[in-house]
Image 1: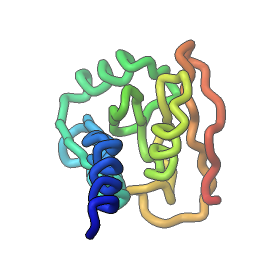
Image 2: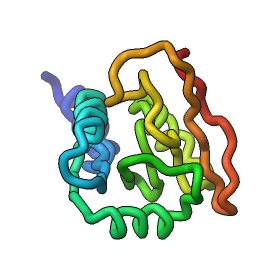
Image 3: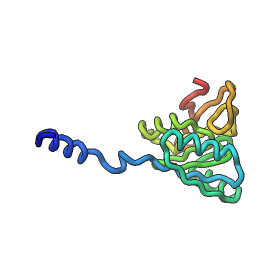
Length: 147
């Protein structure tokens, strides 16, 4: 490799920051023994995310949800935090990546309840929606599944 190529390579590597190379970490909070939560975590890991998981008592988990700005009707069985956003319930990894790329001014994403066919909930063609939760507590459809 000649000096020009070496300089070009070194310059290119210098432009890449370590955080850009590292996988995003999703901090997940759930109750112990929840199989669908484990399924969602595996889905995120398969998509390239690093995941931590802390099991909490139900009251403490609910406090995490409300403290993050989620309202009744926007919650599910587990709550994740990534890149300054909350990710509630069985949100597909593709939508988490989209959220992190677009960086909207929002609390985060939610898939309320535990819809069949969502990541971690088995296979089904039953439709469900991913909601973008605004800072004022309102929400709008961010994505619809199945696509």
